[in-house]
Image (cartoon, rainbow, N blue to C red):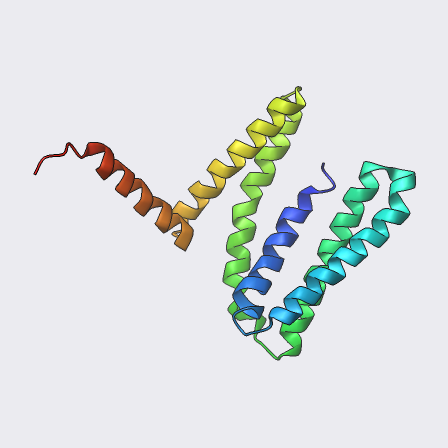
Length: 162
């Protein structure tokens, strides 16, 4: 599980490049091939490492494939002569958002001995932290969550008066 922790960070950075840069610039084909390359690399590394390292081999394969996908996405972006500094604020914001989630999950792993309860606490706590960060950073999804909350509150307070 600890081997997989950095994947969250790498995956967030891949998401910034894929969804906010490449797809917006009509490079869906590049995104597809990046994901396909990652899957092939993951399968190949897993086939080699699983017999010897079992679940750790799978985790290492997943981590390596995510890192390779990140390198490929950045290479595609830089190759098109884009200024990488334009999207750095988003990458920094995602990194700042992921750190508390990783800390929470590690805390759950160290303090909770029952694996099922640990998973439940890690998932629900991570979701709560994620939405709190979205609201604090005034992210679009966070703004939508606040609007939805106001709509629900209005509907609960509605008494049917005309």
